[in-house]
Every structure is written in structure tokens, then in C-alpha cells.
Length: 595
Image (cartoon, rainbow, N blue to C red):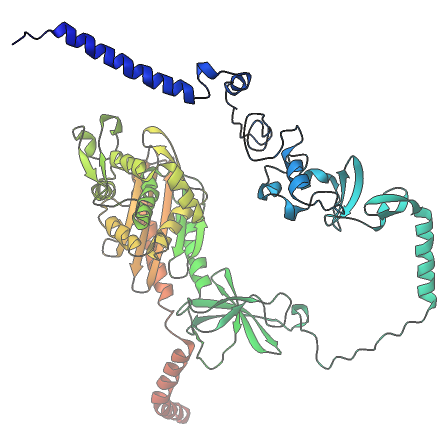
């Protein structure tokens, strides 16, 4: 057996590979028009750099050039004539009656907003707007270098006045030689007036069997003043009595069951008697008068009396406090509000009510979850002031619900800052607050981080009133937040009212001592906010605010207790008492007379 020779086999293998490559190369260069063996003048043109795509509308329609000697796009010729003209001339008929090409025969992109200002053959370029007149749809447009008059996008035929020289006549937008000067126009108008005055005109003598309408200035409106308690939920509320100018439907009484109203005016119209009602000092509208006691009943309670009395009490009590102080009261049942010395304060920790309101708003939208969403504590998050978690180790994780508990129980500043980050900061908090109409409230930044916090007693009290009425974020989220506020342990407004049902959020700053609270009583509910700053005696403020709150509580319940005592019930009681004692009274009278 012969010995295997590796060198011979390697040589054979190399020759075989070279032969295969040679065959492949011959086949490739013989069939490829761009092969070096077949380079021609035409192929040299094709080897230039490809076209640059340019999508800017001010440069072109779609690409840098739509006409190219080496690009096959299916158009029959390669002249320098624009593509749209080629298409319209070769494949379609041109509407000779129109100054532009017929839109129906042009491609879809001919009317495109990008094509119109770019292509000199588009419809917009055929009648370029020069000046638009303010009335009657007239405009001046340039067509083929000539200024024409258009009306409603069509060339105008007829007379058209100019400012200085009179009336000119136009034919298809082109001004004609014939015109009427302004002097002649004035003479024509004068002659027309003379002729009209000389010619008798027969005018109809109209007789109206019924008046066209009774207007408010013709009605006998009687000023009155008495309170009612409304019962019917199916009546209409009008902006003014029916038949008067501008009378329209405002709303229905569906949302006003058991709501006290003050009647200030009465009027009799062709459609019966109507009364003008207010809720406190806020106008509601006109409703139909009812003497049967079905729609409403007279009552001794007046919402205006409540507001006037509370305002007088607050004004008196606040005058005794040696500090910058403001207060606001809202009757939660009617949302009527009065304020004394309302002004902008630094809210201190009462600012946290607006952060919590936005947090529960995002619960309602599903953006955040109280138990699934978490925040991690870092050393950079820790701040001083009230709270306990600033002493927790870095990396501690809290659910949002845990942070809420820390805010309402301890007024924790670090926890509040984490919640501000969780909801998205002031960009989310402030718009929500302002949408509620609280325009003096701003939550910008975080505690001890160049914060800008402002609010007023009026905004804070109304915020708590909206919360009570489920008008902040709706059910069940407002109730969930109220349950949290029940956990609060620090207060001024509830200092002497611990047995009363209510909740609050207080705040202390460098000189500020603020509090906002809601009280629920047997006779209704109200919200109140008292804010103070720069006191003469810092330690005395807490007791003074607590005393003011206690007095407001007593006045509210005393006046509201009259709400459910109607005039008819009182009259019946008086008659019953008299009938039971009338005989004895007569006998005693007789005996005294005889004596």
C-alpha cells in the first residue's frame, strides 16, 4: 500500500476551488450590466449617487426632483416640462373655461395643503389672495399677474364701491371703464328720498288680539321677605318670570329637596304667580308660587339670618385676637359661605389637605393604588419638622396608605414630601385645586425645599365642604379620606368640642397657627377655617380659636333648630293652648269683673 501524500491532495483541492471561482466570475460579469466588462457611457450615468429624499414642503412636493433621466416612473417622456402638466396634457382633457386645471381630473394630491403653496400649478396658486374685505365675502386675488375681484371664491360681476371714487362695474372680476362717482351717488340717494316722501305708501293697520309678550319692566313685582323649606323635586327654575325678556329654563328642583330658601320678590304673570328665591345670598331663580303647602312650606328658619349671625359672631370674636387673623364659614347643606378678614396665609401643615385630595383623585382614576403603590425613602427625602420617619433607615419602603396615616396622625413632613412626589408635584396638584375654584391656593415645591405654599381661610373651608358633600373626588374616595382625617390628634377648632362629631387638619408655622374642620351636628353640618399669623401672644392663640369655634357651634345649632318648625305647626300649637284654657280664662275674667 502506497503512503498518503498530503501535499499532492492540497494542490488538487486548491486547483478545484480556483476553477469554481473562475466559472462563477465569468457567469457574473457576463450577465451583470454593471460589470467592468460592460461599462458604457449609459452605465456611467447610472453609477452616480442616488437622489436625496427631501420631504420639506417649501422645497418640493415629495422628493428633490421628480424628473430624472435615469429614474423610470412610468411617464412617457423625459422633458423638462413639469409632471402635472404632462399628465394633464397627455392623459386628460383640460377645462378651458376655468383659469385652472379641472380638479376632477387631477391626482388626489393636487388639493393637498402641502401641494397648494408649493406647486405653481395648484388651484391655490392660480388665484392668490391679496386682500380680504371684511364684509359680503369680497376679496382681491392675483390671477396670472392681474388683480381681480372675487366674491365667495368666484370672480365677481356687478357694481362694487371703492372708498374714494365711487361705484365701479366688474365683469368676471375685471374692473370696467364705466363707474358712478360718489357725487352722483349722493344725488341719486337724495332724489330717492324725495320720491319716497312724495309717493303715498299704504301701510297695514295691525291689531293684536293678544299682547306679544309681557316684559319685566311692565310687571308689578312686589318685594317680599319670608323663608321657605322646599319639598318638590319636579318643578322648574327659570331665570326670570315666564313671558319676560330672556326668560329661560335654568334647572329643576331635583337637587333642592329640604333646602331652605329666602323669597325676595313675587310677581303675577299671564302664567300664574311666581316667586324669586335665593339660597342665602346666592340667587337661585324663579319658581312657581304654591299656597297649598305641597311644593314648599313656610318656616321660621332663614339661611340669611344664619349667615348674618355667624358673620357678626366671627367679626366680634376676631377683633379680640391680637394677631393677623381670618376666618371663613360654609354651611355644608347649602354651600353658602361667609368670610371675615379673608386673606392669603402661609398654610403650614394645612397645605397637606390639598396633597391628600390629589392623591385620592389619582386613586379614583386608577393611576395610583393605596396598597400596591409604594415609595422608597432616601436620605435626600428626609426633612425636619413634624414627623417620625426621618429617623428611619435609607431604603425603607412605604405604601401610599401608610404615608397617608403618617401625614394625618403625625403631620409628617417627610411623608408629605414623598406623597408630593408620588402624585407628580405641583403640576398635578395646582390644576386640580384651581378647577374647584380655589384660586388663592398654590402648592409648589416641598417642605424645606424652597416651597411656595399659599391658601386662604375661604379656600380651605370650601375644600372641606366639597369633601363632605362628595364633590371633591366622589364616592367612595371622599369618604375614605374623611376616615383618615378622623385619625388626626392635634386641633384648635375642636379643643372645646371633643364630644362633637367632626374632623380637622391643623398646621403650625413660625408664627402661624391654622386649622380647618368640619362638624356634623343634629341640625346640619358646616365647615370652618381660622388662620392666624404674627400673634402678640403665641401661646394664647390656641384657646382663643377654640373659644371662637365653640361659639359658632352653639349659634349654628340654635338657629338651624328652627328649620323644621313650620309656621303652620306653630299656629296650631297656639290655637290648641288657647282652646284648652279659654273657659277658665273667661270664668276668671268674669269673677274679677264681678269682684
